[in-house]
Length: 572
Image 1 (spheres, rainbow, N blue to C red):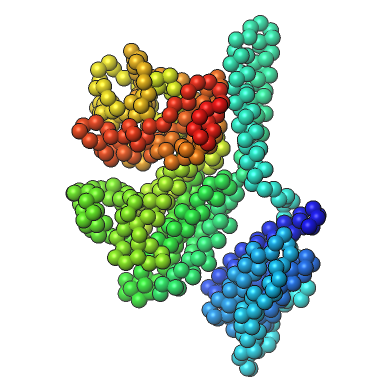
Image 2: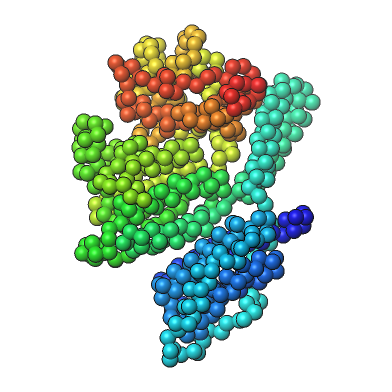
């Protein structure tokens, strides 16, 4: 296939995918509001556009399928065919069939026999028209345009399609510019006289322009969460129906924007949370009616800006978490001898442990006790945290707190045994000096700060770093999901913009480390995952009075200056 044809088909595939998403969303809305004539007009217009586009590029199977659906939609609009759940389900199957056709097209060319793929759907679409109720008024509910006239549509903002890979490349280049700028700044500070002053003025202007460019690229990567959230409308409807329940999806604050990389890496986790809410949260219709609730349950996806990041809330209006059942299960599995003494947040946190489940049987939705552990790990890999709020009879909300972008963070640099580490600045509460003898030798212990006990851990011992300790150590007090804790370091090196570099495959599963960065002096520093690092510390996972974490979290040092870690874990 020539280059022009390939570019055309790439554009066709992207536009058709968007049309199918819009069509699916409108059909789900039509099922809830069958008398909304404007929805039928919108559905007809989208289907007609899809048919014309498919025909123009030679996708005959897709064109035939869309044409059959268009006939049914026209009958719905004219009122000669009633809007029923069965008809909507059939049109949704048409959307699924069209997606399969689109996926099977090889560079825009239909595979042999592709026109026969949706044969069963085609026949059922034609059959639906043959079974029109006689005597139904044929007066249209609203005027339809056989040509799919879109002249009344106001022009939207001018847009251009760009791949995520190109945006990622821009972010990487901005990161490299920032690293080079930091190196130049070190040399400029040593320059004196008029030349040094001029260089410093130029560096300030460069900083201003670089900051604006970085912000512009960051905004280009940001997308509203609404379209992402609404992709789950169909899943909520179909999953609930297949398990004898009724459910709908409600999206709140869909205009909140987040980095597209966050969305891509969180899709599976959000899917599991929704499936879990339907299975464990929502009650069957008859139970909900007996409790005075609407027979149709609600799954709510809400987004909001919080503390320089984004918070995603996945809620259901079901029965809520069963505290007694969770505590009994935890005790039976030996996870916590006195589970009843735990606070709600501590008890609910157990559901994220691998192998923990209150389900008595394994279903296609849940029951194996692994899904929530996977969700937590995915959220932590994004430098985020997850928590649970629940009320009996009211429902459950899972709160995912995430950074707006994965490209850069504000970091606080520290040193331990000659190695450099970066702590995300959002997690830093305070820095205090460690009095001599206040903390016994060893990986960690408890330090009294301002009248309160603070669990602490030495980075040098935690990561197995050798070398004599300095005469004076410092404590970085960090906040995390479980409260506050202290990281004991040799020195505090200051804060600044940190460009995140991914780790090699060897280190991707290392707890406590979330990435790396190149410092202004060319040295490699590891970025600490505070939530994961402090999780075991605050849970008291210790043995014989000493923290049994060393082997679990040991990570090789960066070993020297310059260069990034390669996939084998060595520096170059």
